[in-house]
Image (cartoon, rainbow, N blue to C red; front, side, top):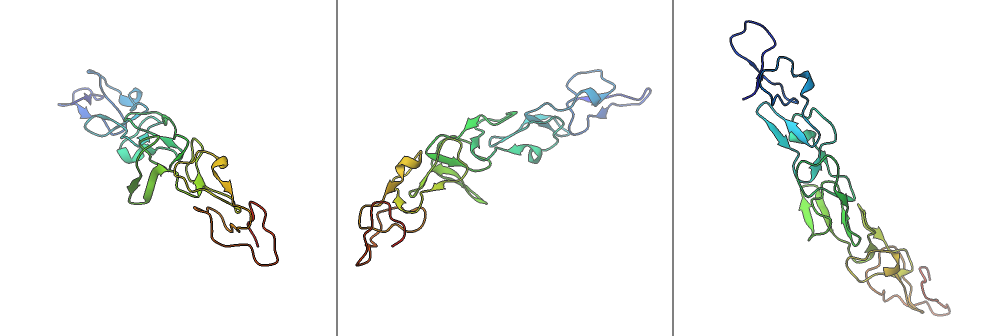
Length: 184
């Protein structure tokens, strides 16, 4: 293991402290050897920040100090200094996503990424699905933009946000409901 010897006459070298990577032999001052971005350095060695996270600062000591991948972004490999890119259109990625598109992934806090659900749309870089507005519906998974939210047909009322199918609520007697009606 790597160590430092900053005191003359000592019988053995001292272990490099966490947050530093004493990768060179014969050093007496570890201050210039901070753990690099994308890594954390415990008392044993330098290790890459894990998949689903990145390290954008130096001197990290534990994997918990690596930053979870930002909402709307993904981190599919270890050792990143920043997120790789936006999640693909038609998908959403919450914090810690490991892929731009994927089958739904769930962790202890809930789903972290997956296809955009019906009644919503997800442009590239979406962290939370966007609900279709009142007066519209979307019956498709993985919608990429607002144009997937279709106006409800003439004579039908589409109240509320995020409708996933054509509602069965017909326009009340004595009223006319044009396409896209959200209130009778």
